[in-house]
Length: 360
Ligand code: PMV
Image (cartoon, protein in one colour):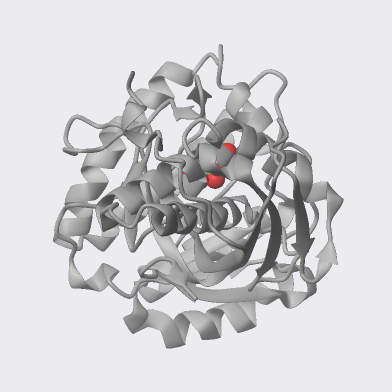
């Protein structure tokens, strides 16, 4: 059984009431995961930068129960208010992880969660949120069984987070994560993410990420549906093959600090992701007119200023700008003067590559 290593068997010890808190950053994929199979397994490997400022802080309070029920009893308190709408996704997560952390049946939970980024900013918190919850559950496992190693803790946290939301697998550590098996990356796995094991050029160590809020609305098509639409997609195979090639190229680019090649791969991955959406059946479009306006502005700015500013997109209209810290002042000036008019309420979030979650 391939997942046997992640099944916790020693359920003898019951903890008295307590809590754990983790602050867990979001991540932005440079090589995109789009398409999955089986139990949240990716159709191709992906590589991401872990962010720093954009994070979810989750406190998991646990209370032992006398009578175990078949369903886990829990409440979700988001920004201080009980939030029913978050429950179905978390209930599904508990169902999927119960096999691996059966001790959860002995408790009821209160999940207190909040994001450091504004709620209605169009930024998905599923990656940071699910990773934070998985880390809290792993802290419980460690409390019950202090013998587990730090490596096992992270690996299993990523494995559990993946069962909540695929990209969450990449939020349990930093600064760069690889999720999905690739022949050139020893230890890589479809079941959990690992930190990029290769050397990385100094220019990427403090790489900047500014998130331009183009649209604060909830996106019209969920990423779960988008992943599904890759099944039977006419370009799926070519896309998945391309991701394998791009991942290996990017690993080398990250080593060499080759910013020109970095831009080519990163922007191509972003546009390819959206091209897959536009060519699925049914087709859909998540970019907005202002997304395209901003892309044109970036290309113009780059040409005129010999800059290394580039962009990537996730499954939405917002733009993630990526650039070296040495260019921060000029780029921020460019954002303020030329790009904020295309942002909803002129909003953007300043972030950069980060080290990963913090236990509080
Ligand atoms: O983790 P999900 O199921 O929300 O999918 C995320 C997919 C992208 O953000 C578009 C790409 C990625 O690799 O994060």
